[in-house]
Length: 175
Image (cartoon, rainbow, N blue to C red; front, side, top):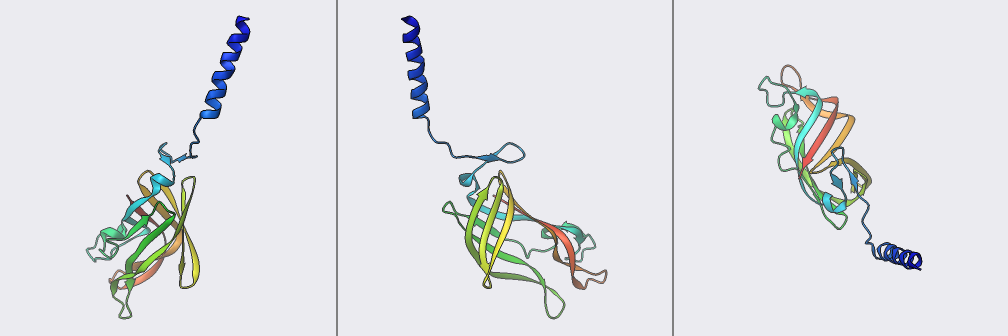
């Protein structure tokens, strides 16, 4: 009799925990074990590095750097705002070569679109000149990393003449 009462008690307790447990949103973690989920991704990120595979000397101080943000202020105030509702806004600022072959800063209109998160990969989707663009970012606790294995960046020749060069680059945004 005691065995039946004990078994009934155990089954009752297990049933209570099984049916009353809360749903927990699936989460993933970055390489450091930090949890990444849509709530943790939302926020304002500022560009903190524009690292190129080839060092450039855009400010003509004879010291080439792989971080173009150390060479020019053109990228300053570049931001991505990730909203909790699945939308985002991003500024588009950078350095370009003018028709007179000089370096100049540009600031295009803001991009707006939607975002999704799959594990630690953030996808921003927006329309640029009628074309749907998807940009992928690796997500860590407080940063976004966009890696381009082969693209074009602005550089200069030995005589400080601006040129476009083929190079890999990584853009880092920090919350």
